[in-house]
Image 1 (cartoon, rainbow, N blue to C red):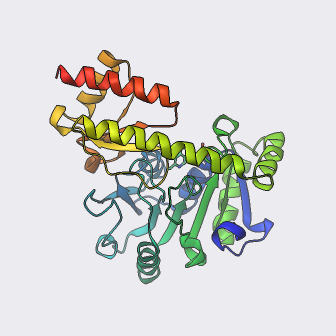
Image 2 (cartoon, rainbow, N blue to C red):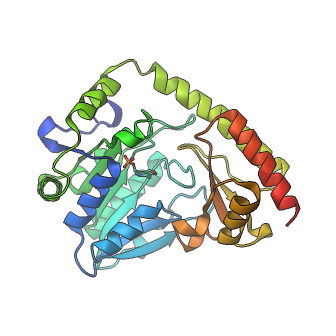
Image 3 (cartoon, rainbow, N blue to C red):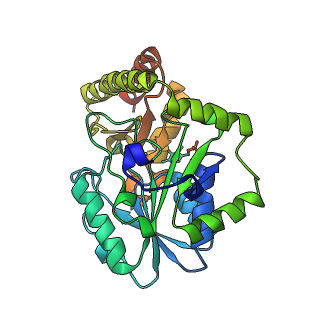
Length: 302
Ligand SMILES: Cc1ncc(COP(=O)(O)O)c(C=O)c1O
């Protein structure tokens, strides 16, 4: 956290969790009471709104547009007296947006002005193509919960390991929830995490270079089929506009049924994702080419 993101933390400021998702769950359950509003940038990763609702809060969807690179342009106008938390996720699942310095600074100022906490989900920070990752916790540490994990950068998805830092009272609340639910992250997986962080990072660089090639194959192929898709600057998803073929769920079901290709309907990420589907390129080049060919054949019959 110190090296990558300029966060001034000591070991006591870090909670090791059973995946980033558990950390997000614990943070939201600690902070959110009945009726509290939580700003989500729509389209947003599926679990945020579900967890906010679980905690009794109200997800407030702030649409971000493809034309503006899927970055928030006016957060202030969505903040009310009830806004408790803003969730940021850069690089973003599903859009692949990476927030530049000015976007992060504006979000920090909005949070400061309105007394809002920020949950910054940075699990894709290392899967980034030429852009630079900015961590909002370096600007407003007193109101930021920073979340990271090993599922993406180190492909340790099933091993369930993540970590968080937050202001002490929030971290204490998170620890309480963890102690009385899952107890702790698996001890020997924590050892593997230490190896992952301390070891040679060449494997991560090689994987990101390969993801970039896969991204380019997928985006080019989609464009050749007449499907628009802004090139993602991070993570490993293409968020493709398919409204000419039907709504998100119809297209998803058709591709699953006819082409045996699994995509995620954009509407699962929020109302603003309607008309899009999310494709993952965390699979081999061969699978990507086969999948795209099947999608093309299936949609040609639409
Ligand atoms: C944005 C985002 N945050 C968190 C997670 C969960 O990560 P973990 O496997 O560490 O729980 C995912 C996984 O898909 C994700 O896309």
